[in-house]
Image (cartoon, rainbow, N blue to C red; front, side, top):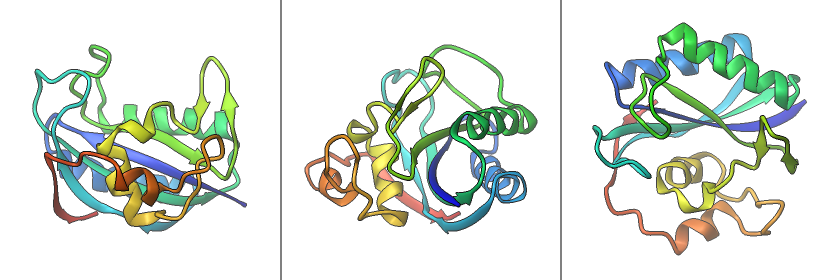
Length: 161
């Protein structure tokens, strides 16, 4: 059994409902959800001309391989109603694999740990709720260590997932 961290984000439609629905479907189709972060309102990153996001993280125990996990995550996004738009643009739901055990994977379709995760407060703040001691296998820093030096302005706890 492997442990994966999944980041959820949404800023189109009923975002909180989409995050909660994604968490339910993940527990049905992917594996046992062992931890859920709070839900945070976050300012857009990368492309700022869009509404604020709602973000959360889950820890899930799964027997699904990373490529299979990516495929299931994309299917769940479609099932919830995600429409493809511009890169880093608005979305009904987004599900990203942040880590998978201590795996380092650099495939054209999937990079694990998620690239740039350590620069993204909207990932690291909710991830710190569920996995503060997880160590990045490439850098050796914990989630809490990354977060300690990060600007988290514009990230507000809204509710629980």
